[in-house]
Image (cartoon, rainbow, N blue to C red; front, top):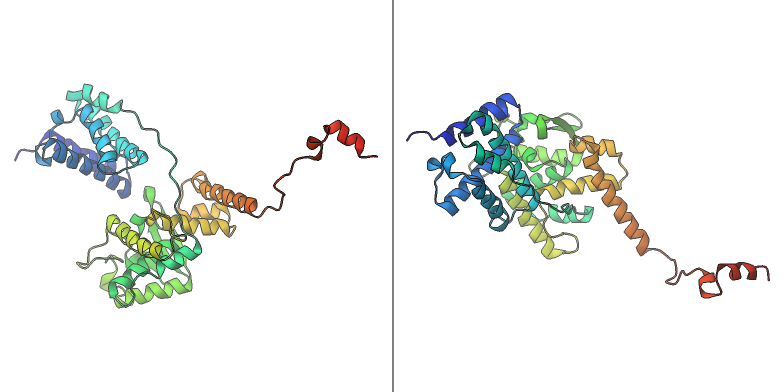
Length: 338
């Protein structure tokens, strides 16, 4: 089958432009790829066009708007996720205005699509008690349960993003004291995260059981499925949902609704904040590019402190100044010397 112009220029965009010219990280490239995959899925499900048949004449501004609407209604995506997908598409069609201007009017129409206003997402995190409850849910008498417990423990302890955990291999672990994990995060930024002795012992035992300490296993996935393939982000998210649902059935007050892999990262950050760790140190630990991003945990902590103070306040219900129930401030002041 003859390659369509869409397939040709999409390949150029993903490989030559994003990687070769812009030098984007594989995480960013994966996000762009996922957006295109969803667009192709939409075109097949809604418009009956298979990926191998799609060409540029099929992609119009109205269909892109329909795709964004489909993301929210059929896929249940938030407005912020919808906007992130739109940003990826804009980059692609901006690339096309220079590389394939045959449909430039349509490309400009797509580039004019506005982002949607979105509310600031709620930060879902667990308390120390909630984390303990979550981590004891896996059945550690089974190999899969032991894997899941180590995975969740490591994700919390190093505040790792889901992709950072999925990408871990034995060669990224330094077995000194303390044990160090090398995490490759957003923007190709690498950070070293120390593990406490107890977690290091747990991880070492897991690796020993699964043959991950052998020389030939240095590039094996640290967390794999039954076929030896690394767990995907979706698979890890499913594991977290499974055990958070189990924990919530035991203690609903400790496990909020909507716990995700990122909730474990939020939980670690909140515990560091509540233990008065310096905000710069938290920023470096999380791998944030700017301390502004990290400050969200300080704001949440201040709100919690204020709410706690209000609950423990001993001020009487009626704290009305005495002159308001008398003849006014001047009369009250004059009465003080009598």
